[in-house]
Length: 375
Ligand code: CMC
Image (cartoon, rainbow, N blue to C red):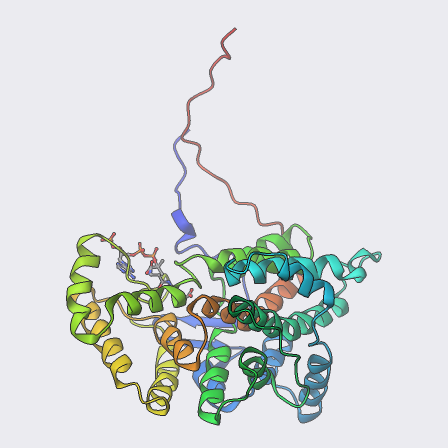
């Protein structure tokens, strides 16, 4: 029979419907439940965006207060989580720390063992808040332990963005830094059927539990073609050193057929809708930390790459240097992405569970025809 049409990388394939977000490459826009992401990024607390993505509407003041108080109460790290993290080598990649810790949280959640406990929508809503509350502490400790530092206990008088920075650095920075960080969390929170979200949905479609889905999603996010790109951008900046060396570096990279991380996108072909908001946040940080050299390198590499390839930056391009200026280790950038995207992943797992169909595509076989085993 003729080989069926193959869609490598599932490019262009519409795998299911979703009501959570809409990516429109033609109008270069991203809507979370109908609201433009750039408007949410500058006006809404991250918690309100989480409520929107989970429940479909922005929260009332009472709903926001309820979510905040629940989330803050769920922040403290279990001693057993600290132990499982401490068992990893100090130089283990922070994404491996996060993946291991999320997996362990599943093992610690006894409600999974209840009859119907895995798929119970109410329990899963609670687990989403629990993961949102736990991840900043895990990510923060993932960075601190690399420097031989103890975890910083969470503070329940701070919102998610501020507490995240507090648990990482032991101080709350100026509002300009907090605002840039919160903007990045909102922009990273959700992006339809990207590789990690689709991974989470594949796992959920087998009727597995949300921790397994998120653990798998963390693994998918780690790769440099996806979330790992924000880390890779900063490694490239370190390699280049300064703006005057950007052109020569790019010549070498393109001659060696290396991908330049932080550019290009499977869906957007004329630029990533999230970049202008994150670039504005980066500009504010550049001014705050007085780092025109970094801005020059950023602009020079972007202009040179766009001129040569006609391919535009994606969100990871401004996010990487922004996190660097805030003081995060380069290896912590993708774990921050996890702590934001947890909202999208858990929203998609719930959507998948609400109308499940096992995700199981076909393949076109290209190996040898049937043959007899030698006797
Ligand atoms: N550097 C150099 N060449 C590129 C790049 C890049 N960043 N992106 C695309 N191209 C070229 C690619 O080599 C190919 O050229 P040719 O047709 O001559 O072989 C052409 O453009 C099409 O690229 P593709 O890789 O086939 O397209 P895709 O839709 O499979 O890839 C992508 C999308 C994001 C994997 C790719 O653009 C890429 O590898 N970018 C760098 C990694 C990156 O920044 N990832 C973050 C993605 S967005 C946010 C996130 O998920 O975190």
